[in-house]
Structure formats: structure tokens, C-alpha cells
Image (cartoon, rainbow, N blue to C red; front, side, top):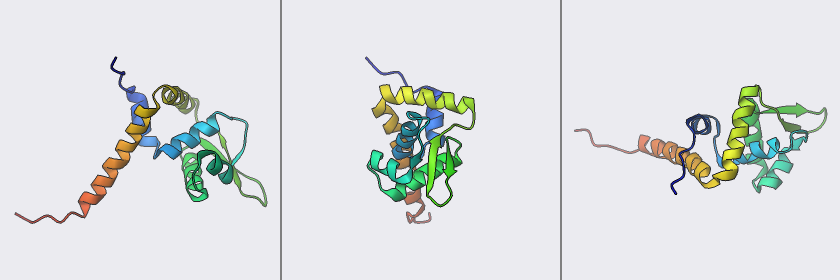
Amino acid sequence: MVPQPIPEDLRRFLLTSIASVPHLEALLLLRNSVHQDWTVQKVAERLYIGDKLAATVLADLSRAGMTVTLRHEGSEPVFRYQPATAALGQVIDALADLYARRLVDVTHLIHSKLERKAQQFADAFTWRKEP
């Protein structure tokens, strides 16, 4: 049985709004515990990534309107899942369902985007002989 293609709206969302697998994993981690505040260190530990990467990922998700950054006076920022719009929340819910069923397809799509960008960057530095 051939799997169905990833729905176009989710494919577009993945390609335009999810920079990497750690971004997706962090988003879904926060989504699965809506009322919990997450520090950079907690996210790093749960996803087995470094603190610096976790901080970047969480900041990116906040800028994209998928999470909010809460600052407590005198302490590090904490993050919470809170999509900017109901429509964004629905897309993320659909993405969570898709990822649970088709993890490999979703990660391949994200990696293909990264591979294309890396190849485009490398091609920019390829020396070509003028005709």
C-alpha cells in the first residue's frame, strides 16, 4: 500500500514554518503540556539537545507565534504553548496527528528542505568557467 502524500496545507506549513526537526519536536512537546512552563534547560534535556540550540528553537517558535515567552523577574525566560490564532492552533493539531502517524515522511520532508538550502549555499560558491 502506497502512503498518501502529505496534505498540501501541512506540507506548505512544514516547508515555510518549521526550520528543523528540533523545532517540530519542541513545538509538539510544549503543545502536549499546554499549562506547563518550559525553561530552555528543561526543553534541552527532554529533546537531548544542547541549551544553545534549545534557546534558539524556543525563541524562533515564539517569534513565529506558536509559543509565548514569559519572563519572571530575576530569572530566565520560560516558554508556553500558545498559538497566536485559532487557525494556527488547528494547523499545529493536524501536524501533531500527522507526525504521530507518519514520522518518517514528515522528517524526510523537513530534511529535504535543509538539504536543498545547503546545496544552494554550496552552489553559490562553485566556481564556473565563463563560456
